[in-house]
Image (cartoon, rainbow, N blue to C red; front, side, top):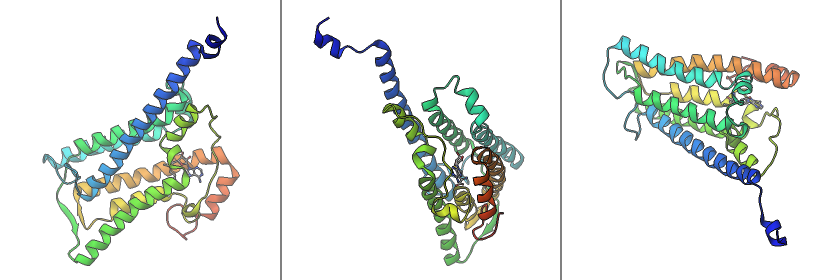
Length: 261
Ligand SMILES: C[S@@+](CC[C@H](N)C(=O)[O-])C[C@H]1O[C@@H](n2cnc3c(N)ncnc32)[C@H](O)[C@@H]1O
């Protein structure tokens, strides 16, 4: 073999690993884009804006059937989202799913189960409340938008790109080891421990017109958020120990300036 051949020859194993890194990156980007479209659709779905099917439109079904189908759709999302986020589940399924794309796969499946929910959601148009005062109605719409802004800004504070899997696939591409999880309390995390979840609650409830279908969505997801917080905090204490315990004493769960609840 000439010197030039020696310099340029790449073993099949190295070439295979490079191809895998690029495929993993493309997969991570695709999963992120699906997530991004899903979250934008979620805003339109709940606020009744732009999208073809909203929480209050679709084929009318008897209320009992609607309640059951909607509960099943929300349960599917909740089970997927909570079970797959646990450390024990991650340890098990990374035997089959390569570690660098584990988070992207989680994000992709969460997005797909949400898209299924939007598609199959059964509307229940009975009006529970309707704000007549136009100023108050505008205030509620603005508050709902503010909730979504809180969700987005908080993801950037905690680490948006890691949360949605892009960090992991780009690190893998450049051969950088994944850094261990770090306990953080940036900006809003000094006022509440769960600003992302607080943003969702505000976005879901601040509605000038609340139908029975929307109410079912807001009530069940709020309940699920509390269960999610309990599971997440158990993991965070296991991970960060006293740092997180002291944080819990110091900073309230969801209501700013209200201690430890
Ligand atoms: C979807 S984020 C929600 C974060 C937070 N519960 C909120 O509502 O803003 C979930 C991820 O954030 C991580 N996380 C939550 N609080 C954290 C903190 N103070 N420091 C580091 N990671 C945190 C959890 O371990 C989990 O992987």
